[in-house]
Amino acid sequence: GQINPHFLFNSLNVLYSLAIDKKEDLTNAILQLSDILRYVLYDIEADKISLSKEIELIKNFIAFEKNRQIKNSKITFNYSIDEQKEIYPMLFLPLIENSFKHGLKSGVQNPYVNIDVTEEDTAVLFCVSNNFKTRISKEQRTDKGIGLKNIKENLAIIYPKKHTFKTEIKEGVYRVE
Image (cartoon, rainbow, N blue to C red; front, side):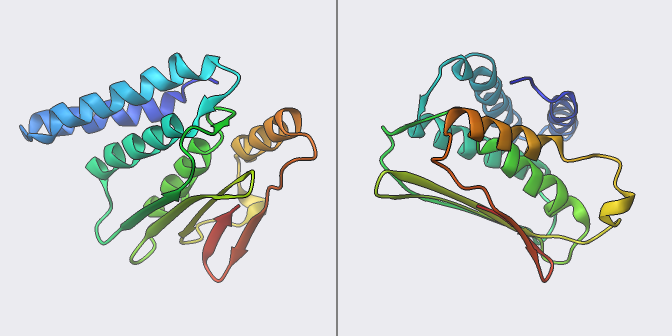
């Protein structure tokens, strides 16, 4: 439930570079960051939030990240849901952030991130996948994937025995469902 200082630092650098270049996108980027921070600071206090707010957060995050987009990258976001359905807040964004951080910015050729949010009966299905370039082995990693651990723990508490969480690495593609 806390803002990642690294995300905030990088976001301020994006705004700074847009300001130096006197790009017209600066005002939009400030609004996008403002909406993201408002959501993270205020909206996540609720036990549940409408999917429409979560979708809006994802759209703002993607739009903001496009300000520092990697060449030849492709980002797709598809959703088909009842936007009034409610879910626990901030379940999706950390997974999307990981896709940008470890996928788009990994140095892979023609990087992409695909995000899908759909509905099946009473369930909300979320899937994010990205290609990536392996830099170091799992044994060499210094971070221990605390974000994924936190999401798994949240799901177990909020949706006990009513959820699935799967990750898969196959042929240079990382997928979370």
